[in-house]
Length: 193
Image (tube, rainbow, N blue to C red; front, side, top):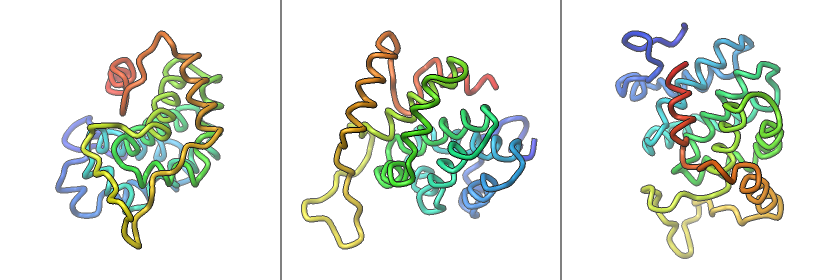
């Protein structure tokens, strides 16, 4: 493994992230080696899982567009799965990451993943879609002030495609609980790998 922090875990230590480690992991997602892509996406998932500070670091490093690029261009199902997990975690409490996912067309490859691959891949895609489309209430996200500032980014308005996707998610996963950033089944399966 290229990214091993203190043993076999891919959870990056705070010191590594404070020293620019998130930038390094985002750059690694642009590597031509699928194993490097997969490990970088997994490490970003682990760093961002329920961690708004690290989600902001992903935003500052331009990570979500790289994750979406992996979804769109990788031929390796495991890379796509890990990229979807990373998107789910990065977008769970960060509206700018959600907007980046929408602006970089993350919805289409995520919807395609709902019908392809393993149940785990489908759950990763469903979690990512839920976190991109549905803002998480009470998750520590700062509400936007009325009027906003010149540099602020407004929450994207819900488009017809977002409504269609939410409906499709409800129908397909009516017996599952879709939670942010990962449901308990998805969270457990991510840690087992």
